[in-house]
Amino acid sequence: RKKNFTPKPGQQARREIDVACSKGDFAAAFAAFDAAVDAGDPLQPHSFNVLLHLCSGGTTGGNYGKDDAASNNDVAAPQAKVVVPSADAVHAERANAIFNKMVTLDIPRTEMTYTALARIEAATGEPRKALDIAKRLIDERLTPKLRTFAPALHAFCIKGDIAGALETEAAITNAGIEISELEYAVLLTAYADASRWEDGLALLRRMREEIRSLAPPLMESVRSFFQSHPQWGVEESVVV
Image (tube, rainbow, N blue to C red; front, top):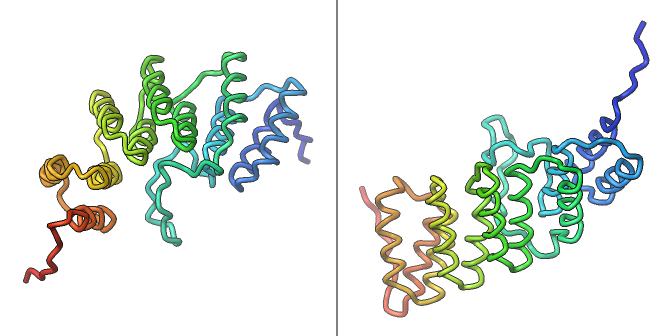
């Protein structure tokens, strides 16, 4: 005979928040959060982080906090990674309220906390604030990941602020992190948009040393770089 199970305070709220976030149901997720806060139920850092992730334009899909790469068992084709969400996909006011609640309750912050906040600042056109958030993470002796800095770098490039992008790249290097092909691609596009051809060529030489083979998206960025120059072009050839 089974005993009646009574969940511990906060467990029901965590389940409801997890389910809502996995579905991208913003209203349901925050209804559960607000109910838990009003009832004084304790919430774990995980619940705050998944809510911040949702506010930053992401859904958990049951995999929040895991590597971005798709597993070999995935059947569906992986979606393109969104480094800087659209402004209408984020909820900055709600995110700030959640973060302030974490500070008030002395809830431990993690890399995921600051990554979500950086994504929101980048989405709202504030790459400098996104970079400051990434640096704050380091000041708090947390270990950053590329995804912590990437929103700032991409947002700087989108705004045409190459100096800011290079400052962010330097911070990434200082943190002992290597940039990915996505960052090479967005930097190359920024150089082309600014007609900084020599800088773009220097980046290509660096890519030749650091990247063994180019994935199709980066290859397309390289092609676009050369096609953007008024006197350059791309010649198709086949190597046998």
